[in-house]
Length: 196
Image 1: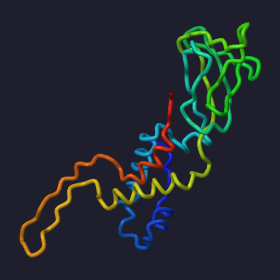
Image 2 (image 1 turned 180 degrees about the vertical axis):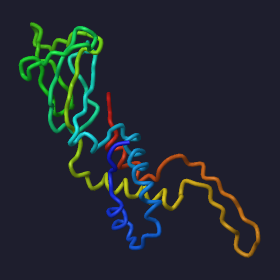
Image 3 (image 1 turned 60 degrees about the vertical axis):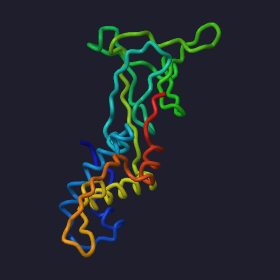
Image 4 (image 1 turned 180 degrees about the horizontal axis):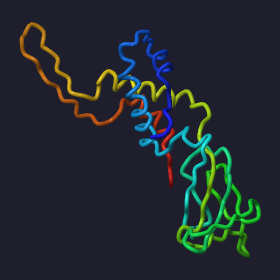
């Protein structure tokens, strides 16, 4: 599941909770909400800050788009012509360069007109090992995670059964909205991975 995006202490401080009555529920929710946010955004944010991530590509284009951002450092780029059975290291600035703006590994080879030449196409032909993410989660993203925990702690996405005033009848209201509140969704949209 990876590392959680917030801690119990951070949530309790944010929510103004001093008792320990909900600690077990909140502790159980934190990794689940963290995974939900990671899934929605298509990124892990913190999982590869200290542990490297390795991705394999087949080439056939002038760049290799990394899935985790922001990239902290590239540990190595290798290529294989035997379907990934063995790999040989490529040299930075001779064989490839890292484009920080797009978080891509680009080929430095150019044709006679100066256009980039594609990395040759090989199945499992390129392996990139790198570190990425945030050592400190951005404040707006952290607030969105904390607000999502509150949303689930309050069961705002579940079935509600309010009792009408002055009656003995209970009305059941099924919540059909499948979206998170707008203030949370707006922030998560800012951090969602885009592979266009």
